[in-house]
Length: 516
Image (cartoon, rainbow, N blue to C red):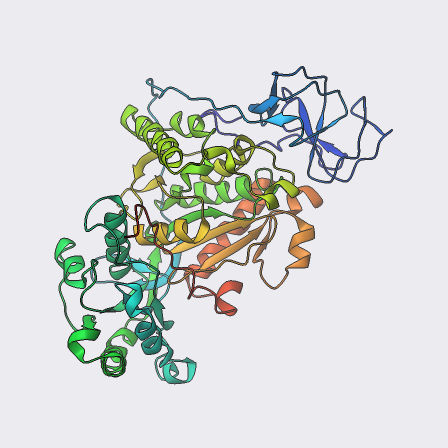
């Protein structure tokens, strides 16, 4: 455990060549590094049942109601007596909700910042630096989504060949924008997403396309966010332009007018402090919290020490581990903001007849995760060890440097959409089961948690963190590799998701409230 209470170096002095991995001396379960068969004696304990690779075995007898610990933290309680050597999973381990008080005492926590690392990026007039150079065609409402796609699809690789500094013309469409209240959380989320995308450092030109009668009016977005129309920020709506065909033609003409100026922006050296990294995980397994997530946390620490920003998200997937973030908050207010967001989610799912412990997903459970507590303890490791400097609303523009937490759902597309809207110009996405997610306009680096899946999905995974277990590689070595690869991607190297053309359908603003 680190001084801040964050389990980031669980594998220190742990032998990954043994069949059972015990992450902390106080743990009551170990993780099988291979399938275990009944009758084997491991760590002095006879295996009583077949234990699949990645799943948990009890190290000692546990009475019903007794806390089960992994990462030196509770991951639930025994639902019945569990014998030493038994498989610990959904039939004998249950979730118990625990509410933590905000930590009220803080030591002075600072990060020594020294910017020496650089990348080659697109320098914008507002002082930000992009890692990509897109023209964004944004639909204000689902009714204008087809028009937006038709405009963007007119600019394929051959059409953009004379413009080598433009990474693409991308349509950002969604399923909302009307049939919702014109105020409140859901409307505000959508407006912040639009504004964040329109001012994103990876976007050189913007065309908003509306229908004309929708709740989410384009002019309202511009007015509220003090955005001025000009050569690189234009608007159209279908009703006043004369219909779908005329709107598409007009939109193509508008984008054509932008091409020369957007292409004039060329990559130049910039300090790594201009990088803002979205930390994301999906399709998690038992290795996520042991390999890829702590390695990504190490990379996030390296970036923050260069003066950069890392944005952790997915509030339902810090649930049960929020106290680890609270201990690292720079102030009581920041600690209480974490607790307030978790409580908001308790209330939110309750009024929608759900519970926060409906996670892990079926795929997560097949991979060895049993409770949301276990999943969350692994998920927070993506945030590294540096102090938590602020808690942001969904899609709120982040101006702080350091580790930031952004409130969002655990649903990856909605969460990443919000992180990108905050200004994240890079995405790092860990996966154990094998998510093939990609995003625009920020490139997405995929990090495999285990070597078996990495080998299976070799054309989709950019980094294999499974070597931490399969080859006894250190978390710091893999974290360094992730960090260096992020700098290369920021400078223009393509990720696998970019090579496959992913990202056009992953723009999913978080919808809250009734559809009317």
